[in-house]
Image (cartoon, rainbow over all chains, first blue to last red; front, side, top):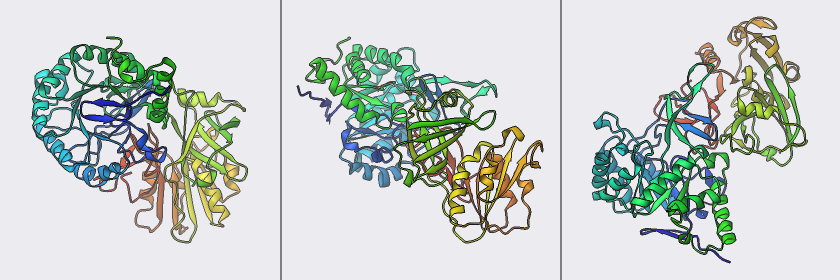
Length: 303
Length: 249
């Protein structure tokens, strides 16, 4: 039996629903030494900001049981370099490009999104709203519904590409933020970003990360992520890209059953550089074994 | 790769010998491999371990590691006949000397291993080697004899229990005109060396250590700053070896 892995996220058509998550895959160059990026549904590139950022002091990654903490701090070469060096290279790899955008102010976000859309090099935007809002004293854009809605509305006015908003799980009710993003004009939602965590070194009696706290990712967060995808899918009728601890084709299928239309794979790339193409094949095998012709047949089955 | 041996060198330093398929010919001294711990379920992050010795003819790879946490404890328990998953060789190693003349190699503690492969390669090219190795105490010393076959070795210990007492910089006389310095060890040692040789025209290369995630340059977890602190350098991909002028030590 042949299975159809294609999926349409609104106007964004993907040959399969698996893509590497932002921040875990650079701009694709490194993993292209391991396999052809054209095997992927899309590539979600590292968060891009208006100006280059060095990020936080090291150590800024640390392993925890079945997961990891990171406090990279959105290190990236900045918009100009991304437009002149990174995206032109990636655009030659025959894979849709989703550019993750971050900023300190609403104006930063709008400028970056505008330039990315005008470049003609990207296929969609993913808005990273877990960054601190400088004008609001550092509170993240993505934790208050009214603030998030304002941001999405502003970005929407300049965004000519499909606009996905990546939701933070560090909120009381993620559905409220999903609704805010939808009413601001988002075309889709991706979730979840990392959960804030901390690890303390028993020898130094201090936090391991120089930043003290970091975002928890990996297998450890999968049940939380599945639950949040489910909760959001129940209330919002927008395409959802699910993520959080996906390591296998079965994990990907579980997110689809929870209501995701596609998935992103993050930490698994570090454990296994071939994680994404492997997950695509495992998902195909699972569907074959279960007699599922099209991914839509199982989408939201658990809702 | 297949585990051929796993032996204790000091109270907490071990050497793991591996055989089997590996791109041995591509290894340059100073590169590392990324070791998967178990099946990666409990330990999603691989451990970067420098290549201490690589023999393309005998097809063996030796990794020297200090047992510090759960990951390296797992490595310590590996027995001959078991297989482990290693990714590599990764990163940029020590470049060949840019100009002729004697070479100084300085290692500290668990920074010593990658310098062994380097010393083997340079010795085979008939380069004159002065090797200074610093350890905490006599129980910490390893491979002094192995290095002794490749060059003139000076051992230093912090407590003076073997070799010269004190830090490696105190063992460096001013009587030699070294062309190149290769070093790996604690950041404080690398800094002290740079200060020691300030004003000379010795070309210095240092190997840096940092907690890593991807190990291939994609995640930007293990960065340092370039010399004028304007840009980041990825230790796993652009390094781990850098010219000491290139980066902020």
